[in-house]
Length: 415
Image (cartoon, rainbow, N blue to C red; front, side, top):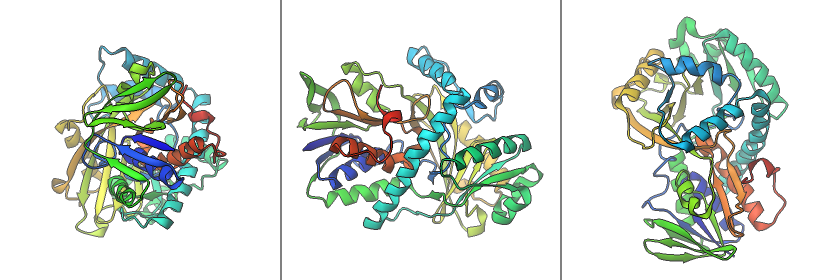
């Protein structure tokens, strides 16, 4: 069976690899010359398998007015004359209900643990070098009340397989001395020893290079997909700037570009770009930054060690429709980072901005599209793209091969 995968980010490349390993003849298509050139290029780097609570949660809405009024807010909202933006925001508000957030957390946990197992299995076969470390994760809190609320979430997530502990400030500093810069502000942390980190772009490039060696894989890079060609109940080919590409089945895994590609078929994907920023900081000394992955909860800043580089990612800009770097956001991020880690050489940091393809409830869309009998979707992983990529690919592959799915696919099916 011939399968055409559209999109060479981490989700698309992972999908192509798992499908090829299952025995499908795979063609991978992308407009860029190299893989991982868009949202997968310089993301946060945390493989956060045990902490996948959706962005929409009961504690978010009360915080929004304060965030919108603060110059140093992690959230910035730019209203646009775009019905899709307002529809997405309304769905986001509805997803903030406690009952919905609890269900989504449980469902995302099944996918994240599948992704962890799939990633580990892949790495036993493919020794890809991407700065991968299993160094654990700390979610640091300044507010004692928020830490207490997080304690309840830890108890809930423990029922779904997470191994986490609540640490006092002293215990946190004993585990990660680099957080001493938080001083008296530090109330404590949630510690998950099993968490991992790595460079998403290097992982995607390494897996892409492995695809080159497989006889049942064809790579069509620098190829713009213009549209999907329908013939009756099926898609017969994709129309590109380099001619048609025919296949028996088609997988759309092109992030935000998936929405425009599918609209002519009457498919309106609930994806919206959440713009985020990152810094890649060279570490002159190992002690200049944290050895453990850290999330500064109140500021929504994540820190992930990648060899001799510290990746710092933060912020959500809703309403920014391009990936241009806003120097004011980068300046704010550097200021906030310097307060905690003053020894970092932020003048040497490489700045980046990217658009996360997010659904309102943070759950990706994985499975058969109703628009055509041979059309499949693997989109909407948002800020969890690296974490969920291998699990999403494994789940999609099982569905397409007609095998029993490794987890319940129902929560992620296209609607």
